Image 1 (tube, helix red, strand yellow):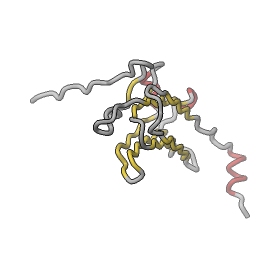
Image 2: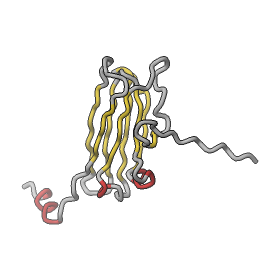
Image 3: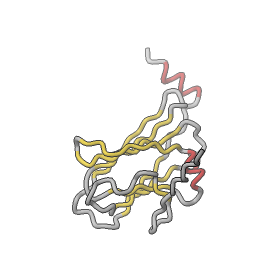
Image 4: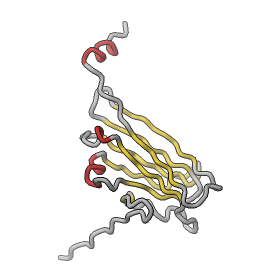
Length: 145
């Protein structure tokens, strides 16, 4: 029986952040010139069900790559954090999802990458989940008569 080789974990040379696996060389012939740094509020790192759903659309019609990054991955990364690399074209969609509270949380944000973007541009995305409603707020939310 053979053991599969361990997958190499890439890091950004400029920020020392871990690169989400698969987020390099997305479009053949187009260099990865934009670093999108992903941060999560320190209080949200302990959420058990929270994830970031990250999508790259090379064109409006083509979903090129989609990845899930659990909130607990930010704990594992320590101070280094996470990032992705994209070429100067297309769009990135970052969705913050937490299925644990009732009602669940879903927020999304599009980042449009202009073809004229200067190589080496860094974009920082900070995710902060809202606080869970108190029992009194839940009563008010459920009392829609």
